[in-house]
Image 1 (tube, rainbow, N blue to C red):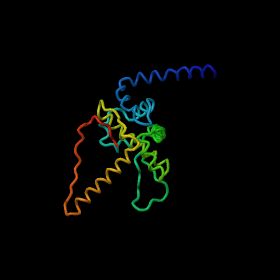
Image 2 (tube, rainbow, N blue to C red):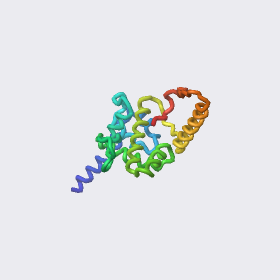
Image 3 (cartoon, rainbow, N blue to C red):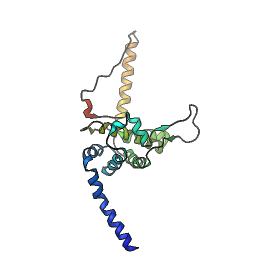
Length: 199
């Protein structure tokens, strides 16, 4: 029995080297995913193992979110009775996202703010599901654009967006009060695909 335990322990000790060798062709993708708040190299390895690096299989971020069991599930249009659930997906990927969501919720980053804001109203479980949703969409955006790096907008991202919306409403109201019709259009980002501001 002790010899068997020693043999299994020795084989287990060889696994990290085997994993690194198998993931060597995907080092660029691991470097892209690593800086996402709440993630580490191990989380990136586990997630890429569950999703692959070919993001063309997921036409939209919601498809990848569904695979990771982070898409909301709703079978009724009236008042909800009982607990809200998420769609079934890859349970191993869902387990990884559970840990990364908890870590991201403590980070001083946009993902942390995304977790803390709804947690006050809906509780930690739903907030962590929401942050896992965001993390997968960011991952798809990064891996769909080789060379792109994640740039965190900061923990005050949502406060800035809310302030911007207030300014827009105030200016539009001032212009409409004399009788003008206002049409708003966003100017394309000159930075192009080099900016990872996926939501």
